[in-house]
Length: 381
Image (cartoon, rainbow, N blue to C red):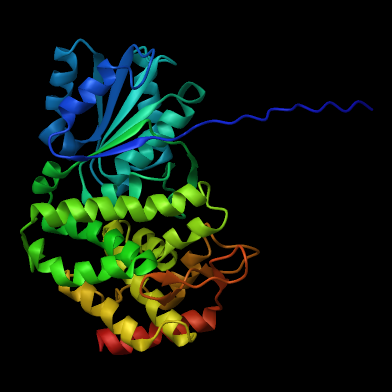
């Protein structure tokens, strides 16, 4: 018998910068001219049909006018396009256009595009660099930090993917002006989640300043508040990802609201936007955390009031049975040994810790059902 050990120890610096500002396309061009991504010959702009119409062709023209060889590849707008089939189609298009290892991808759009384009970049020619140019609050809050990429399946969201860090992220606050109220509010869900999870002072800031960014169905988008929100989202998520890049322990808390939320998103056939589903998942979690003796009732009320102030519907979708939701939760990535696990709030700004390296705990079906019934009675009436 022969035994061969292959030692492949390697230290790689995967650090990158996040730029928050307005009209950042010219900074992106300057970065490329100064070889932010060295030795590239071709640039592929990956976007969706909606963003292409607003920004895509302008991006293409600016890059080409600065002597970059590039093409734009567009997919239909919406989470329903984030599939393995879409990724295969994009790969075939890149190959047919002569893209190879000397290529770079720019993910122009929201979280769906950065998830898909990042996964594409991570596997194309065994890995090519990519940049994120965020055009939504949801992307700025959720997808711009951490390197999580992936696609959805009929069984669950983001079930197939990888960690692949971008070279740089650009958060262009001007693009928020073109969002619908519903799209902007979807991003607020992740923002409120971050405050609930790790920063009580930021939660208080949102309570005091929500009416400066939107009132009912009117976007106000106060400049200083928007910039503060973008920065705080990045700071909170960065602190967590820096300590746990690949979700071995601490990073589990970023799934706050997602265990039920992702299941609801899938069950709605993506009629619920990601943030809308996460909000309902967050509400499920606060009722569960309170029921288990962790989250004080006054904190539960504050979370509900902030969600209502932001204009969210916090009612459980009546068309989705509790049993169906719980069955779908078993496809969650945190499930271990066939048991559903939740991350749970201890108070606003702090998560429960269960043992030295675990921020989630097993929750039984009966405990989930009890919390769902209480939530329905108190909110749906």
